[in-house]
Image (cartoon, rainbow, N blue to C red; front, side, top):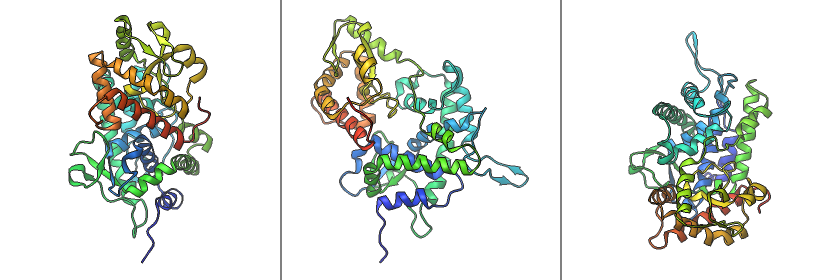
Amino acid sequence: MPLVPTGEQLLATILKHDSKTTSYKFALLRALNDVVLGHPDLALTGELPVAVPLTRLAEWWLAYYWGFADPERPILQGRPARRGEATGHDMALRPALAQLRAAWQPLVVGPGRPGDGYFLLTEMRTARRRAQYPAQLLAAYEQARKAAVTALLMPIQHAGTKEASVFAAPVRLRNAVATPLPGTDPAERCLLVPAYLWRACHRLSLYVEALCVHEWSLFTEQLSAAPRGEVYALLTARPDNRRPLTWERNHIDVLLLEQHRFTCPWTGKVIMRPDEYDLDHLLPLSFYPVNELWNLLPVDRTFNQRTKRDRLPSAKSLAAARPSLAASYSTYGQSAALGQALQQDASLRFGSLASGDFPAQLAARAVAFIDDVATVRLAGQRF
């Protein structure tokens, strides 16, 4: 009886040894790895596969390929297909992604940036932020996402060997026996990821990320498309706040004007006025793109700008901050708009929380999530 390969062996085989005509297989495994990073506990026990919507993987693809679709410096991601006398595109989603970039550029100040695709990913994940964008951009985003979903089917089908393919054909969630990502609609087509592969991605998150980027850079250089250093820079670009968090700030400012108070989770400083705080990403946006409200809290402006910046909190700092997080979430609940947004965003990330003290439960889940991300990706110095 042939030995069943481990998750580690499958990952290494796909990245290092599978034949590749495009960069799609790198993008597939990188997207899967990023999804696992965002939902690590879905397969820590049991053997049910995890159902990942193809649209969720496609959203990551738009971020990865964004820098390669620069109209002034397009970078090939495969050999252009030949159809009779005509030459096709190197990747099927390039035309739709170029249209999305064109719709995005007028909405931001300054030239386009390689990390803009990641920022757009965070914006489209929540309904309240998506609603702030014009219909033209939303339509272009939907078309690009559909094109990415179609492109995804190729590496899903061909990952592994003919004798032992890694993935089964995608199915609708309602027809699957699987653990779904939070918020997945029963009608969505999903990739069923074996539990052992999910756990391997979690254990080897940093290794998978590094190997995907390295092999992808080499592959692109071998196409004579761009030097590997340039490709590496595009693949590792991360977003900044290209558009201000005006909606969140306005509602927090109203709470402060109504005499509600926030306590900085890092310094313990009581925040009483709008000019005393920065709206901080607990898990930095530059490290993992999450613009969900549970990840945005008022903090001591001086500490944020001089000490925290883009650093991750240590396990000790997170444990000490947990009561302040719960208190801030409770204060958000004093605003109907913020309270509703917090519930929606928490559900997107963590699914349904048990009945009871919602702020305390959310604080516990947020602390565990941030610490897990920092641990498996072996981030630099933590404060």
